[in-house]
Amino acid sequence: ERELQEFQQVAGAMQGLISSISNAQNAATENELANLERALEAGEITREEYEKKRKIALRKQAEDQKQAALLSAIVNTASAVVGALGTPPIGPFSIAMAALIGAAGLIQIGSIIATPVPQFAKGVVALQGEGTGTSDSISAKLSKGESVITAKETSKHKGLLEAMNKGLAEKYILSNYV
Figure (cartoon, rainbow, N blue to C red):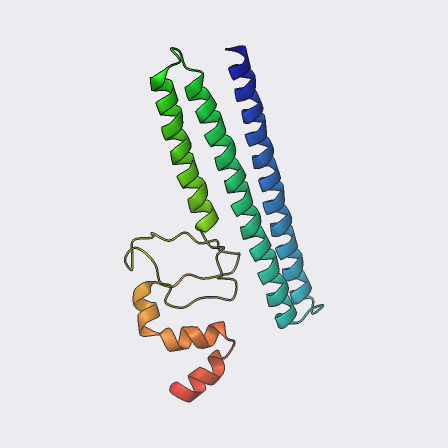
């Protein structure tokens, strides 16, 4: 009983540490992005340098978040398995519960590992995935100043949106509308 409580305390402390590290990493990325924005506005870096460094920072942030989610799932699974095994009366039922909890945890861990890091840093037009045009089924990390366009308007103006993401909006407008 005492060992179970100690394990649960250690697991809770580990979760707190994972959360603190993740929050610090996110804050560092937000600070880095703000510094990049200031450097771009001050003319210290080109738009190309800004985009390249921004992409690297966002990718690292996404990878860090994936690692934090993975560590959190491992700690949660271990804690739940130990908790199930320590629930009296210890016997076939608690062992079966621990096995089921462990299996569910492994599925979650596998899902986290299999989830690719998002690649939206340079924009995406007509995003594919689950859901409908208005279901909000796909999660996305957005940065200050970025935009989200409805599926209906994306469909109407796909060519213009693709040109905008490539920095060719003026050329597209002159070629197609003037």
